[in-house]
Length: 193
Image (cartoon, rainbow, N blue to C red; front, side, top):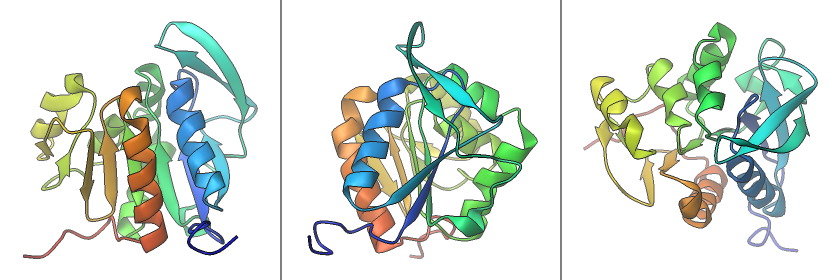
């Protein structure tokens, strides 16, 4: 296989999630990253396995945690992915280690991708100010109150930050995520005029 077929070969991608993560928003982007050649690790707020959900109410699969946020460092990864589900980011945003982990990717100018309710972590980490972001529609006010510009788009890319609204957007989200990680776009830096 060529570099074009495996554009993420040699890249390490952290997926930050906990109980309540939307199954398809974790498994499909993870599969896309792995198929593009990336090494992927699930980072969470506790060790063991996390319980994924389908549409926030039906139990889906469980997934093995590779490292806790207390053990993890952005230094060890090339990019960060934040899957959604309502409960998952709500639990993450009250965890100080998780929010430090998210902020550190922006401080190190590494690509970040968040889907559905995943941008709640971006709001809590105070990294959406001045950025154009999409999300599940119920986060619109939170994003705007945090200084972000909210748009209703299938996928939005802003200087290495990839966001999407819902599971139906996963194909576009995965394509943009892989492109931004492959290009090493700098999510921590604002685009200059």
